[in-house]
Image 1 (cartoon, rainbow, N blue to C red):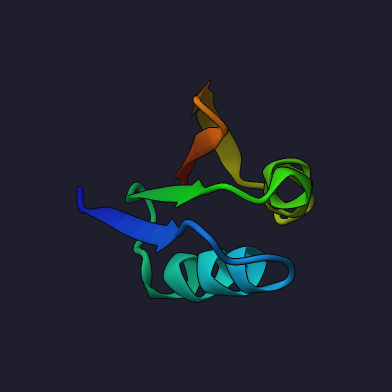
Image 2: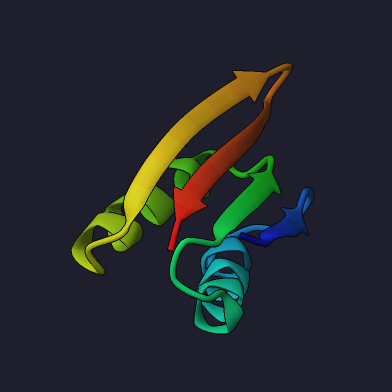
Length: 73
């Protein structure tokens, strides 16, 4: 299993979602993609997009305005 980290801190929509999708395309089944960012709208959009793709959200952590979303491919 590989972990792919995507850092989108300081980026606004749609960049975090676009970068997340790129990483998910590269990921193999069973891999974990971790997206880190600061844009509040992306924190809601990315999980919704992943669920519509049938992917599992492992967890969403937020600390000091910075969030981290863990997605299983």
